[in-house]
Image 1 (cartoon, rainbow, N blue to C red):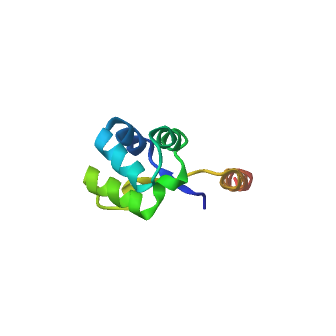
Image 2: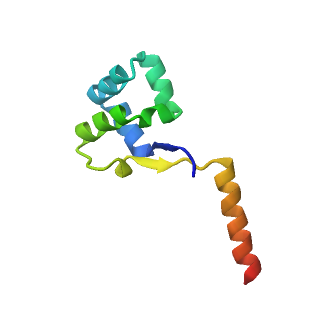
Image 3: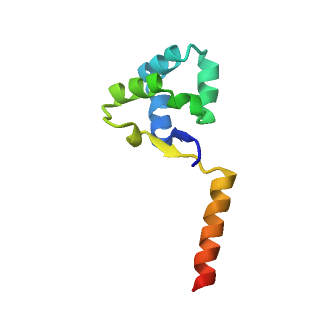
Length: 91
């Protein structure tokens, strides 16, 4: 299982909402420029419990699962390719 990251639309909402942006990066105790870098890279630091709570409360989202997706890592991609090849070979 890969790391969890914010869904792209959630990152976009944070970028477009100055109030939410400020709350998230006050929570992380970061500068605006570093905050922008974290958003640009969709850094896993954005998935800390307190950050997710702030995002949920501000966007009216009930579950973290509505905010998060799995980052596909190289090993996850390799597993998917192996599984696909096994299925294809068995047909």
